[in-house]
Length: 98
Image (tube, rainbow, N blue to C red):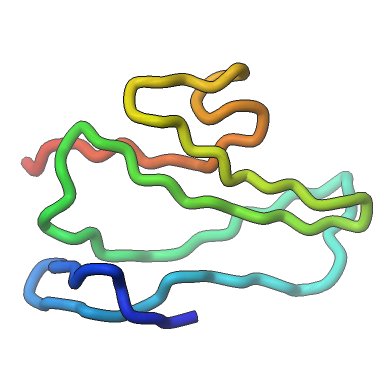
């Protein structure tokens, strides 16, 4: 899904006021005995600060229920079961440019 961003982002060589804000995957049943990787490629905006973590909230819908991997810790906090609590959003810690 594409939408306008709250503020324009600046990946290398462009200024982007809008773009992809949500990814959706569906492809039928995935039995419990199997797993899969869901990969996407992205460019990161130049104004993102090294040392910060960006989060990717995920909602996983299964036959037996829904898992909302959306919990993001507040700055300097850690959840009850690691960063973000019992269903933390996946995060990516940004390193300095080389």
